[in-house]
Image (cartoon, rainbow, N blue to C red; front, top):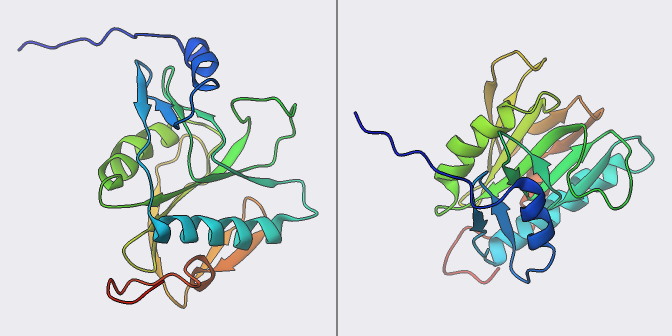
Amino acid sequence: MNVTLRTPKMTREQFLDWVERQEAPYEFDGFEPVAMTGGNRRHARTCRNLVLAIGTRLQGSSCELLPEAGVATIGSAVRYPDALITCTQGPSLDRLMPGVVVVFEVISPTSGRTDRNVKLREYRAVASIRRYVILDNEGPDLTVYARTGPDQEWTAIALTAGDVLAIPEAGIEAPVDEFYRGVSFDEDAPA
């Protein structure tokens, strides 16, 4: 059996320096920069609602919601989820967030495989992450992967309209409906 080994084209530090000078968003798979796909209006609205729903509930707490902040994952990989929660304070110029406890990804048909497989594996390797929330862009559905400790396996929970997302790591809950407020899934209707 032949196995092709990939040689990194840059280090994590080189990527972090390089990506600051780019206009388009990129992630780093540990070997080379990977362009992040553009979103649509539905994706943007869902992300906005996520920030409003979770960010508002975290006001005054020791945890904060940060949209599109960097997370160091497996090896040298760097991911920029749609949002994350960290309860660890750090310098304002941190490029990689310490102590991430929850990661949020709004997926689409083009990003679904990566978000459900590759990133699931990568986020599992980050000891501090206790919850990985995938918000579907095709309907009001969430898949929540949760664990109680770094050596534990994920437990998957499916949530939909009318359900409540519990985030005990930050001491908050949010109705699933809030993430999809004003988001239309009917292609013929203006959203």
